[in-house]
Amino acid sequence: MRAYLPGAVQLVYDNYNALVIAFGPTERTSEVVLSLALYPRWVNLFFAHGARLPDPEKILKGGGKIVRSIRLSAAADIKRPEVLALIDAALEETGWTLNRAAKGRLVIKLVSAKQRPRRPSSGGA
Image (cartoon, rainbow, N blue to C red):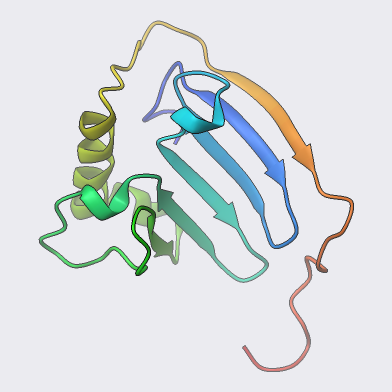
């Protein structure tokens, strides 16, 4: 994601369910465009305005009014043409023009006092 979104501000949240890395043009959470949520067994790519995006391949999941996501099985999934098309559409939707010369920043926003265990349980999936 860093290579694809040069100059992005990366906001890190260690919340109750997952480690989240959100990407946007500024430190304002209201301007986040995309985020990766790292769970013990999978990673989701969230689109902050996913409900408004064209999705001809029907890969976006979620039924809310705004956010949609894709479950990534492998790091290479981020380079699938239909995923890259959605990322491009998300950038266009928000009007975020990437500054390829800018250096991105990493900002730790929140560490939750109460968390679920990060290790997968020994039981079934």
